[in-house]
Image (cartoon, rainbow, N blue to C red; front, side, top):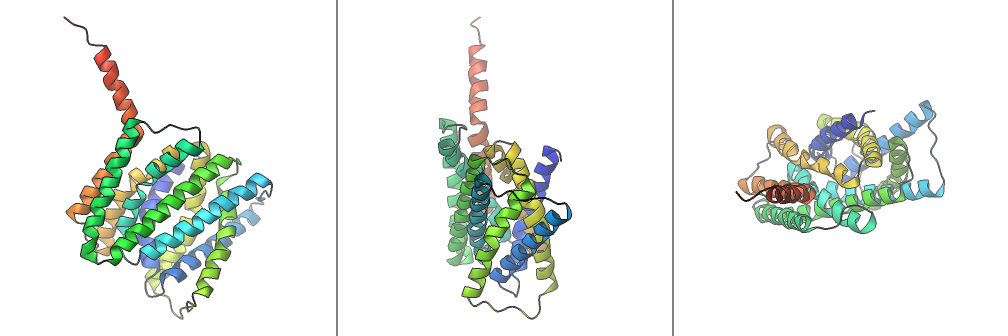
Length: 301
């Protein structure tokens, strides 16, 4: 598969995932929606591996990769599903827009990627300011909305740490293999949480919730993660994180158009600040370089 096609595929899937997460818990609870998605996902992955005779390596690097990806998947998804009860679906993608900044900070310490330059620090400050603006508008939804924002921020942080850890291990595994291994680690943990919390198994599942669980289990968990790890293996980790530069706007529009979610001026403003911060974080050094080159080329008349 071409890298651009995989990259675009991740953008589409990640843009639609927040709304599907919101719908998957309708009348059945977020834990059932999450656990059902992941059980379906691991079953589908194992079926593909069996049909195409794909073997999962179990050497030390592979095991470490599965553990890093699986624990990250478990904690990040548990946080974001819990948070989806309290905030609009589009906000999930907006807050995840901070992922490149979080990833870049971690990569500067753990990987041999770009250091924290003044432009990157300015981008971080602008992104955090956008998050604060969204926080300020959350009170119109009640105090629980602030908890929802905090939960998604935790999820984004865990997701970034997991991505950097997988990149650092560098086991050179195919995306589907990493996805399968990660789900094999995460699914027993999800099942444990589901039964420990005493969640009832619903006797009837609304059509929209069922369709969302199926979409997330097959497309989101299998295809989405496989494409994500495929791109992650071949592209610098901070460039992979730039996928979240596009998904927030698409997710906000989908939430507004398909779920009637109100998007206030503060949310649009915060989104613009976060995305502007990402541009500055990633490309500020290029703008500075062009400015310096232009000034050096000016000759006195």
